[in-house]
Image (cartoon, rainbow, N blue to C red; front, side, top):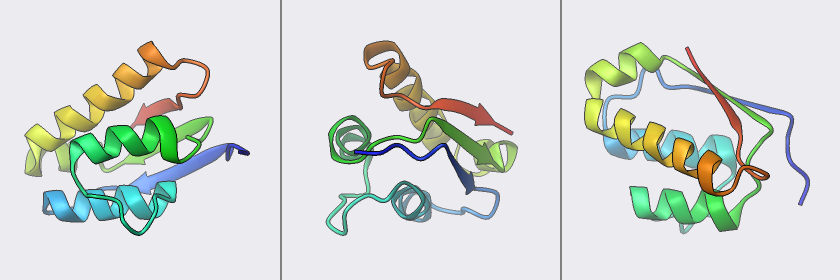
Amino acid sequence: MTRLAVVEIDLSEVASASELHRALKDALGFPGWYGGNWDAFWDAITGLVPMPIQLRISGWDALSRSLPADAKLLQKCLARMKSEYPESAADVLFH
């Protein structure tokens, strides 16, 4: 599978966990049956789709304010992937 060089996701307008998962699904190309939860997100990034070389997440401050628990879980999943699967993980920029 070919990895995209850069994927950008704007999360500044996300107001719910379901909107967050929909934005992640659309930007990263998850399959239609993606479950929209953090276990499904982990499964998708580690086995279903190739992660881009760089993932640029904008609107991070807004997401952290509106959905602090989900923002932390997203950050945790991406950091865990970088630790456990460094060769296939994205370099993530939060801004």
